[in-house]
Image (tube, rainbow, N blue to C red):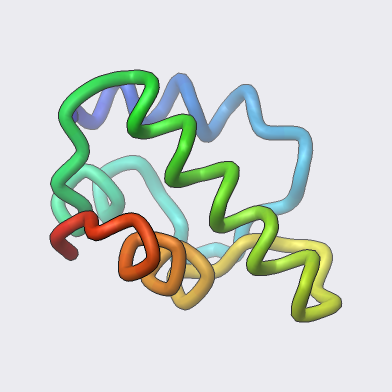
Amino acid sequence: MSEAVWEERLDESVVRLEPEVTADVCAERYDVDDHDDLEELTNAALRKAFDAGFGSISLEDLDAAADDLGVVA
């Protein structure tokens, strides 16, 4: 996925993102092929953050969600 698509998805988020969660980092870090996969990954990361009791998404949340979904990080 391109950085522009990540930027769009992160901008539409209504939760807080940790400072290290940026479009360029995510585009390089996760092998996501389309918008639906990207939405699934970010939603799973949000669930991870909420389950842990945190109000923001970190790279660790995204990494855990990527592992669950079989996304190459």
